[in-house]
Length: 138
Image (cartoon, rainbow, N blue to C red):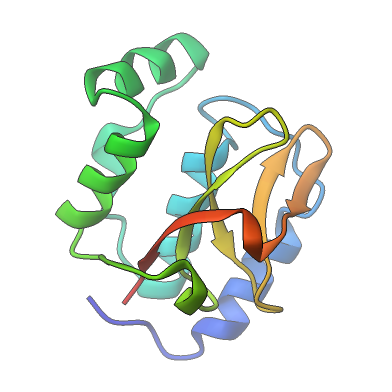
């Protein structure tokens, strides 16, 4: 899989369109946000098969993989994205971070090279030092 022409502009537009989109399981949560970014960067939708529509389905899906960390690893590797060092994560790459509660969440490196994740008020920037794992989206 490769990145589409003009992907930085498409990623920037995607991020701008969701700056104030509130977090909602199955609609705009960390997995759906990351998958949407993958779609605009590559033109492909490799993760849609494991979609869910609410928190209960999300919990069941995550549990079937043995946790969010394993789920992320399995889905990203199955889609052909290789893991890279968190220090090397670049714009458009998918990352796993710890949120303020210490729970793992999935985000995307934005155009300004900071990790972005959805929350109740829209997208939030986290510190690069919060990145636990990263996958190169290409």
